Image (cartoon, rainbow, N blue to C red; front, top):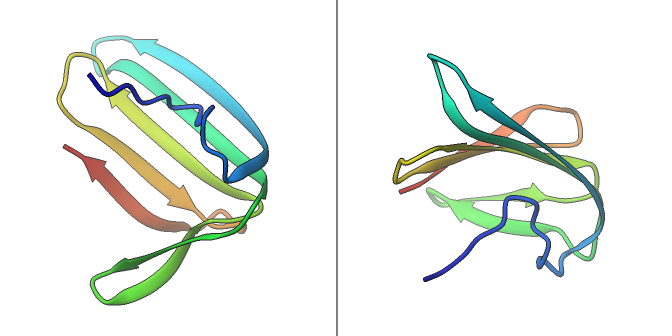
Length: 92
């Protein structure tokens, strides 16, 4: 079974980062929400989405990850260094 960590502990691209995680359990949502702040990366991560190239990981970027409990999907919102959302990524 493949295991992924929200805190990106094995991601060699990250040289310096912070990670905060909140466990939510209420009548609206049950799961984990994590925010990783990339202070310094080894090199930017550039991806192609619908024919357009964009950087989704770089110095001072953030990823907000939402992982509902007992569901077969997760969502990551990737923010640039100005806090603007760049991409909404759904992992199904």
